[in-house]
Length: 134
Image (tube, rainbow, N blue to C red):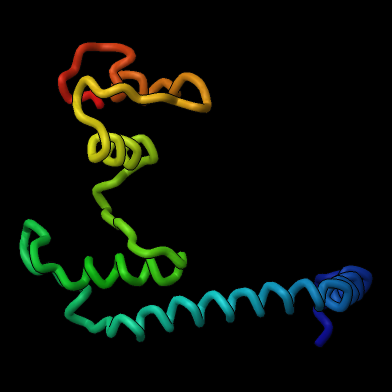
């Protein structure tokens, strides 16, 4: 098929680019297939069903869908367990959850990589006087 509005040189350049990039496209397709298979296998392994995509109640208690989602993430990422919540909205929020689970108010935290970044300063008690800081 020849398109009247496109220069023949551009069409030939496109054909050659597809030939030159064939191996790269194949590698991308293979990676997509491999990862899709891992995800679908995790869904099958955890017996995901339609009901898992609906709310159970407002508090998330006995929410089999959430439990399965965490098992799926753990399986895909190759870890023992996973905590997956839409309420965790940022890295700082995730760090606060981890710190508050591990530290009590007044505990000493050592940062091996230097001073924590700005949004963590209040959370770890370097600035401010919050009783909620770790």
